[in-house]
Length: 317
Image (cartoon, rainbow, N blue to C red):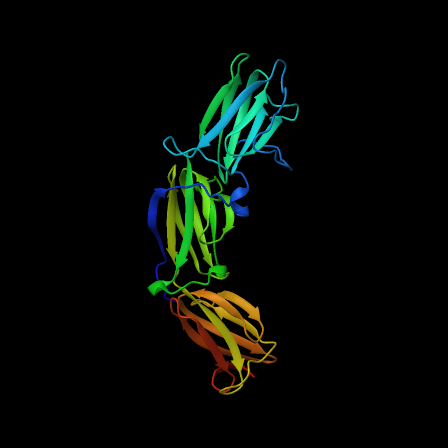
């Protein structure tokens, strides 16, 4: 099988990152890093009074955040969590207050706290000490940016967007050679908020073998747009009896690679799948008869393969 080398291109990098005002569900779950944060069922409003959380009078704590040192304040989409600085009897940091929105105001009693700010999958934690006399204003720099992933076929042939997805992993491998999955099944065209750094991105077109991997770097305060070029196409399989025959139902299909390995299997009259470009052998089994045909998949050229019971090579009678 002659596969063409897949291409993962960075088309536009380091553009100014603007906070998304209409957040999508996949961007909203907070990235918690190494901090073990207890689960939260409900979030408080953007401005919420935590009351007296330690001994002594309450003092105002004003919180806001930026993506980078020179970027504007984030006006919405933040999730704030305030923890006690000492673990409880279970070894976990006690969650004392939450707030959602942009800049926020909390009332805390004097003491030491850990404050965590989450923005999509980006997050940062800082230790804050509240005194007895004056309000405290803390601006957190998340050191985060955005990653937008898209896809194309050769010659700018449109892709089937519903068949394209991306998995984002930590670029660092663990001792067992695996990587930590940060965000699965990211759809093309969405901007994901991430801490600055390098990420391992896996692009899947369809569910068979059209897969491309690349390491992408996200810069603080900016959006990196990466466009992946898949060399693949969609194929629909039919087993027919004679020219113009109607596809036969209850047909079992196998698609084999160059060494005879099974690439994909399916059952039906019209199975459809996306395959990486290259040469394959298609085997169709209907009742007690088995037929095969060699096919070639060209990048971006969707095809319908008809295996004719009268002309295809018959393996068994």
